[in-house]
Image (tube, rainbow, N blue to C red; front, side, top):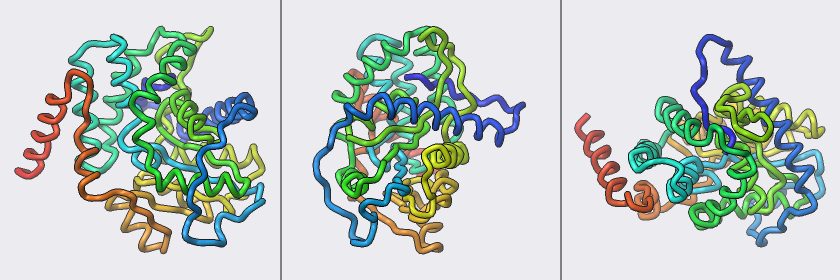
Length: 314
């Protein structure tokens, strides 16, 4: 919703923009969490992690931070959101084809390719620019039920529930729009979400970002800013992600977890003796590798197959 225009200008300092994006995400997350605290869902009870001593019950200076795409949910939130907008005729078929190609690349390549992510976010910006924030929030609730609810990894959900059961706060940390991330967090009974913040004036999206996408180092800055504001001890906190791009965030906390890790993160995690969890199976991984979208399922599958063939020929 709010944060799709993610083409980052190269003339400004990446570090400064990361800090700005992180601080904006933390501020938005705290505001949303305070507004929604009384309405949060409890969530279904989950199975505690294997290590009985963690999370520590009653430790209110500890919290957990979860990446979203392929950590909590199969696939990319922005793609599923795009499918929902296409269904509501926000854009044309050719643009949905573009979303399908980007999702196929994301799943088959197994990494978050910056060029493809930037292209996807820039496309989405043009779609939501000029729309009201309230309109996209309302639609986002519907899209969650239609495309996202059944894609939550039960194992990761159980890890999040273990922190909640211990009396700790749990936050999503994602490059997805903060509004989308907040909806998902609310539906899962989590505390809130840190996400990319897009500018709006009088409740209407301008098509510009505050800082840059909440990706890579910007996620670490957001977690750092939120921890300072909430008086959290990062050494007692946990972070969970599937991507090596999130190593800066994982390195901030005392309890990093690699969830469904890509190759680089798996190697890094093993070298540092981080905990690993993989909830995928070969069959399931193959299924989620090919996106299915209304009206373009065959096209998306063909795109994925073509990409796979291309990669084998390289």
